[in-house]
Length: 155
Image 1 (tube, rainbow, N blue to C red):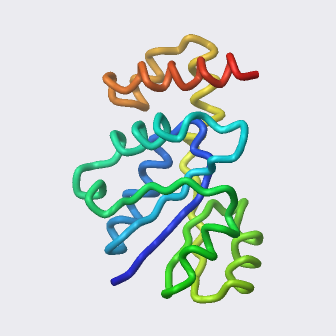
Image 2: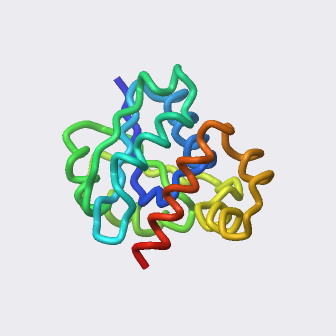
């Protein structure tokens, strides 16, 4: 059985995150998505709920969400068997360094598709609901707005 994993804040989950997770699920039997539970992140259950709803049904069956404090802990937890860690190219050096110390993990860098949490924040803050509904299914836009509001009230 092949297992892939990734780790991030997913503050705010985007269709780009979902696309990466979906691609991982297409290539692996099991996918573990670690969401940071460090201070300053949005509530774990709200982020996992939105990510889950963004995934197609076939990917949902292979994905498991777990909370974690840092990337090293994720690598340690997954080190009992060979796995593949997926990360953005900006995290490649850090991930490769951890993988070489922990062992049993290959690292794959993925190209970002331009749909970042920063872009989503900008769309919400500018009130561009048309662009948001182009990115997200209309029934999920309310969740996105709620997450952004939580971010703003926590600042």
